[in-house]
Structure formats: structure tokens, C-alpha cells
Amino acid sequence: MSAYLVRHLTRYQYEEPALVSHNLTCLKPRTFEGQVVEEVRIQIDPEPDWEDHWGDVYGNLRDSFSLSSAHETLTIQVMAKIERLQVPQPASSLTWEQAILPNGNAWIEAPPLMREFRCPSPLLPLPEGPMIELGDCLAPGRNVMEVLQEMMGLIHDQYEYDPKATTTFTPLEEVREKKAGVCQDFAHAAIAELRRLGFAAGYVSGYLETDPPPGREKLRGADATHAWYAVYVPDCGWVHYDPTNNVIPGDRHLVSAWGRDYGDVAPVKGVLFGGGEHNLDVEVDVWSWPDRIPEDVMQMWG
Image (tube, rainbow, N blue to C red):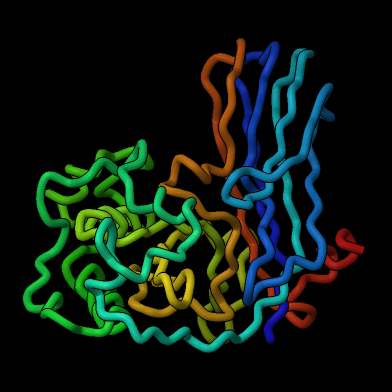
């Protein structure tokens, strides 16, 4: 078992006073098998005139709030203590043909909502062609887990990690043509290809603990949000894959939320009246509990 303290700070600085803003966040990490969120806190400055806290259809934790008086900045800080457990990689006796829709016979008893993850979603239409070169990956009768592991490796090998290649909303077909991007693009490319083949796959957002170089202190805000994907295998549930790093997510991967694509789990969405241009600053920290937490942060946590 590993424990962490996560801090996610979002700060908007407006060119001129914003008059009204309505906001929806998806920032609070969630509890699921292998992860326990012991405590989570959200602080919003200025204090909202109205707020609500609820769970969406996928089980993600949401916060809605509104500000109806002029404000020049908006700061949203979420802190959470998370325990991540070592869970054995699930095993499946299915062939890949049995695990796909619409005809895979293992889906007869599966929850109906899982079928939604086989369908196109707002940011992920079914691609016009293959997202990766599959080779003989889909040989008849292969075990589904072997196929999924190999597909993760193909995405990793055939796509280049390049932060300058894409933006948050670069269209899927452009990602397919460039074969480059960041973790969001790796995840989107994999999900689109999996759905094209008939698998049910979803987008996972979260955090990845990173270590500083030897002899160096960990910089504040140097961590970042991370993204990977999960595939629903009918006889064992969701199985997670991180194609950016070509690893099965383990106890260093902290899950915040999941949905059909990035649009379902965007950290902050909103409608703003006034404000003009704005600057956005995001800081993310992931500290091992309790040894790596700075003293002032521990005091703030209490």
C-alpha cells in the first residue's frame, strides 16, 4: 500500500473584472477498487454565492458553483489524501473475439452502461482508418489480455511524445496523421482504435507520482495531470493501460475520474460574463505520505 497527498491548484487572472461566472469542476479524486480517498477538500476563492456537490453517471465527484459579483481572480484548490493499494492484474479466460461488441458472447451478463464505452463520443468519432498498424496482433483465438497488452505497446512505439504537436482539442484525425502528442492523445488514439475493433474503452484522468533527479529537491507544482485508458473485459471488469509509459498503471497512478473521452472529465468548465482576456495557471503536486510532504503543506493540511 502507498499513500499520497495530492494538491491541484487552478488560478484564473482576468484582464478586467469578471461580472458573473458559472463553473463545473471534476477535480476530486474518486474511490474505487485499489484506491481509497481518505479525505478530500476543495477551497474556492472568492467564496461562491451558490454551490452544489454531486456524483455523475460514471461515479465521478462534481462541484458546481456560481459567482455573481465582480472578481479579478478565481482560485480553485483541491487537496486529497489517497491510499493506493497493490491489486493483482486481473486475468481473463476470454479470447479477444468473445470480449468485443456487438457479438462477443461474454457480454450477455455485462452491465448495460458498459456498452456506452463501445460507441463514438463527442471528441472521439470512429476513426476513418486504423489508428495503429496492428500486424498479427489480432490473430484468431488469442487471449484478450495478451492482445490488449500488445496493443498498448503498439501505441507507445508508433506515437511520438511531443507536447508541441497538439492542443487540448486537436481533432482525432489530426492526431492519427501526426502520430504524435501528449498523454491525452495517446489515450484518445488507443480508445478510438479499440472502439473501432469493438472493445469498450474509456478515458482515465489522474496523477502520476514523479521523483526528482538524484540529489535534487522536488519542485513545487512540477507534477502534472496524467491520462491513460481502461478497457472493459466482461469476465474481469476494467483493466487499465498507460500507453505513454507503456506500463500497467500501479500504485503510483492516482485516479481522479473517468469517462468516454477528455470532455467528460475536463478539470474545469464554465461560462463567464466579462473578464476580457485571462491567464490560467495550474500547479499540481503529488507527495508520498508523510515523509515527502513539506512542513508548511503538512501544517496547512492539519
